[in-house]
Length: 352
Image (cartoon, rainbow, N blue to C red; front, side, top):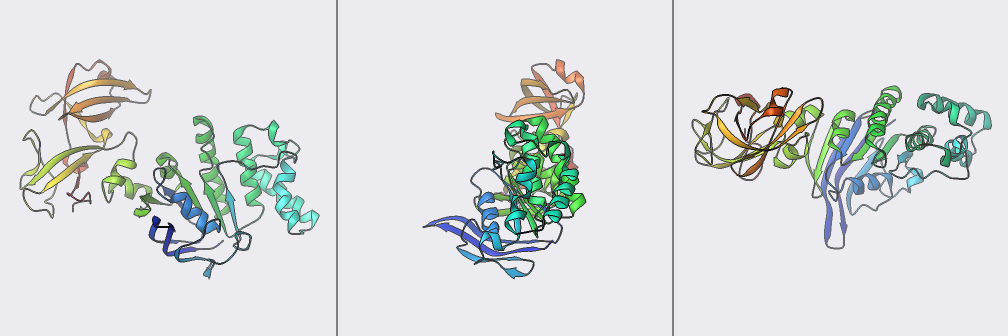
């Protein structure tokens, strides 16, 4: 396995900048997830690492070696795509062993390597089947097995679970995580699904508009988002936002309510700001002095309940485990614990 260093990497199509000055160091054996909305440049960056897209500027190094000019086959990486890309006329064993045969590996070595990978992925009973006789999850496991047998320096995953249903995605997430723990393989994983990012990653790279917005552990991005984009993208249901101004007593909302802060911020008094709070941190209150919100929709999820409210004319969500919320009236009172507040300045950056 190997480290991957991305230094000042840029990508442009004509005058259109797709990626801007990407700097990222991925350690040997680390599992890094690139996450962001469609069009943010995450798949383009992955394809540049793989050699499937030219680099407009900057440098990519794998195991300390510059690879900008190397063909994909010479970079010693394996890629797992959203589409399984299996050969329909070959059985599972044939698909997994094909790249080894091209490299003229000895037959007994191929057989032992395929058997070991099949055992890790639970494919032993399926080795003689062709892809059309497999489920979506089984096909994706074969695609991963095909990558594993190559024993590459790094694995690149491009939204590999997007074609699976919710239950299969959950199952495959667990299998990928167990596989990484077993192989200790350097891995870069692209997804737009922040749940996949949170559950799989050692570190998350949040991207938007071709720019890296924040890099950190899943809980670092969840607990201390660097800006409004990361705060709104990470977490489900998403974070609530309210317009406010900074006062010495705390954050002053549109209706004049003062929301206290745990510590003073480095903002001028009267500065415009945005207050954020996650739905699970909002407290349903019986105190009439607290903020009053209109109830628009109640969603029972089984585990908990999501209240869709209107507060200051804006959508506002509360997540609670208290089933008494199912009988909430047309209005509820809410309060915001100071330790769970996030404040962002007028430029959308986290205020400290």
